[in-house]
Image (cartoon, rainbow, N blue to C red; front, side, top):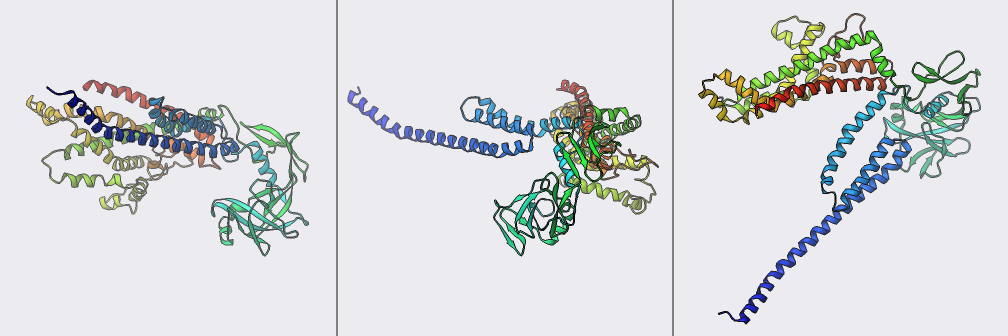
Length: 543
């Protein structure tokens, strides 16, 4: 029998052996806890710092939608990651956030823009338009004060943004400001003045004369307000003057008066937008961004000639998207089937060559192929001894677009079909052969249906992509060829390329109308994709 003393000694020994392991476990738990706390502190601190930086900027820019997103995201981060609760939300939030920022918000902003007149001449607020009108009316008088000019930037020397530093030639006072701002003394900027010119300023890069000349078209239009009646304009590379505004805004009457002619311009609606218009009906060119309701959609569907052109472009878009999808799939599937045969040697080498079109950037391929189709010197006509006017005849131009898109798209289908084929068990093929099926019957009745189960959703996405494949048209044919006297729709224009020409190919950019058409295209593409997904859902029964 074992004595009580032995039992007691054994218990003490066991306790002593377990104590170091328990201590190590406690240390690991404390280390993990400390790391977890530090990680949360860093993440929450970074989120709070970023929010503190962005919120004032968004408020100043009146970007209320993005302000709401930043505040909501920051609050959500603190609620989810500052406690041990809401475990599912910690994993759900990142995907939801990026989905909202990169997909939902752009769609919402596009829809909002579709109901505005946003575009060239309608970009800023009404206050911005008044500032532009009055500042652009500055004229120089004989006694206008002159300034030595230095141009600075906090960005690039070519695009700005630019800030003007001015030295009064009589008082040596230094002033500064950016375009549209009210000029102010440069007392809060650490700067250096040499020979009457600002040669250095803390936080700014002073441009050289050569750099000013490069960006002079932009710099020469910069204007700094001095008062309601005067402003400073750039005059040459090294000088500026303070002139008198000939157009003066009356806030009480909400009107602009030309002090030289006496004409008074009041706010009146012209078409779907408000302008400053005088008694004779003459309007000032500058307007501002406004809500115009359904005017863009009425312009789209109310113009019968335009609607007819859009109908023709829509029909070709369906042919182009469907044809590109079908041709690339058939060629890719055929090559995948061929190279999936174990009897073929050097399959890796062949597959590498077939992937080359996929490795070349698309825009380079399109530009090269556009040269191949040259009627007189193109590679295709030269090699095949043909005289086809590929890009000058509407029908041949369509064929050229489909052939080029086939060359660019079949490697993707080849990769997809190769992977799908390798996932189909060989037992099924063997069973089909035992049952007496020929190679053609095995391919069409066994392999193809099983392959379509996994490939069908990709075919739908390929169709949707080609429905709005702007690059394939613009870089290859630019929408042409165009019939005599026709400038709206070319022979190969799909909807997106035609709309681009209408919205941006005229006198200026019309983002409101372009957004309205984009909304319509989004709906059409969504309806077609939904119909295709519904049709391909029957493939699920194959499994």
